[in-house]
Length: 156
Image (cartoon, rainbow, N blue to C red; front, top):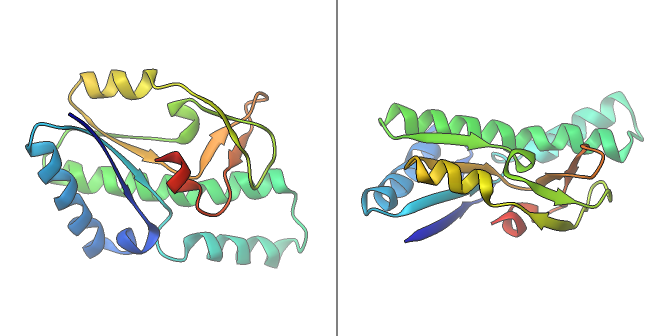
């Protein structure tokens, strides 16, 4: 059976919480399921990034904000993949654009136009746990976009 598990920022806010979530993922995988995990940025990461951007430029472009804000989820998925690796599990972390989440160019609140499941399927066929960065995609110009607040839920 194919299972998608989504964990929000407070669930993965620190190393201890990451390990706890990794245990839930590991249990699901051990039951023989194909597992895709969608993560949000850790804790207050998104708010911290917004604050840092505004310290540098009070009115940054929406495009550059999307590039910056997408890094919070990338950090989460890499750390979760490392946590699962440390447990001896086969895992790969992938970004929204690596998955093939195609959006319009409405930076900051992009809408999903199409999702390709090809990459996820290839990884699952290798019996890997797939950890996907929520909240993000790519537009027709290959620019990073974000789906706005709650976008990781939309990704899942």
